[in-house]
Image (cartoon, rainbow, N blue to C red; front, top):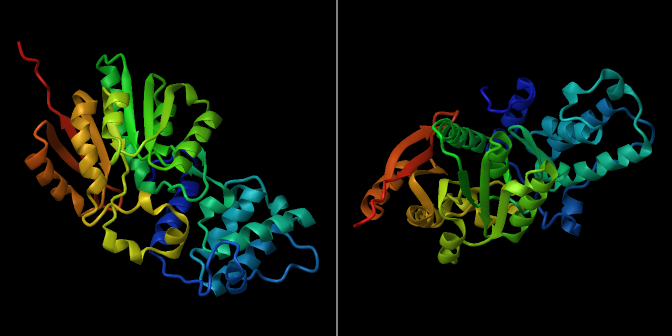
Length: 354
């Protein structure tokens, strides 16, 4: 499978496959009412702690079988990622055979049991190991901040291509606004790839703002990124005054139809911020606000890049043509699975009067 990661292809392919399947899989954990509550421990109890010494490969097998018995999504990948992480690697495959077959210390076994028990509660692996790779970056993760999906790596590539072209054409100052930054994946990837770029990131969640700031600091990108706790639905004037003008506005906004929220898997419903997922009755509540504000934030010919539901592109195009004449709907791009996933719009030139 094609991936935009620059790391080893097989590793990235495994990572993306795991994530896509985890969104589709059907699983349940009857009686679980929280991460550490009595019901969660009772219904999702861990296998017996080993009486003797075991190797990493034996631990992987024990937890793989236990995850399978409990209906946990991707049981093999779940156990492999968690145990590889505790052994200081991204995947089991890149560990030396010696490290996999030598006996684990008592402390290491306890760590494995503790983290794998979290996975039993349906906590996503990204939260369990508290980090995840996104393109060239390793980002810190923690609930309830939205976990970036593989499609968003493709969104970054679209924006990056546009900004690189602007730089080649002589634009001295490149600026970007991200609405709904989550962990900071989009803004930080763009800043990492374009040293001449400065960015502003907004989120309605203080948890997301804090995590984006931490990730920026860890990556040494904090000097070129401003992060603000702002809700674009409530603080439109603040957004306009604080963020304009910018070359590009990019967003992976909440775009799920409200009626689809109930059908989400327990991994998502229990741990991720619903406000980062629910886009209202038609999934366009936040998107319409972003597009309305875009004409006041973008510089002439500045572009908007949106990741949306596959049902959205024609709806967005019709709505913009009827309600935001200063924006031109440029095109719809498809994701790697062939679904219409990304909308690109451009601000028309605003000519000054005499």
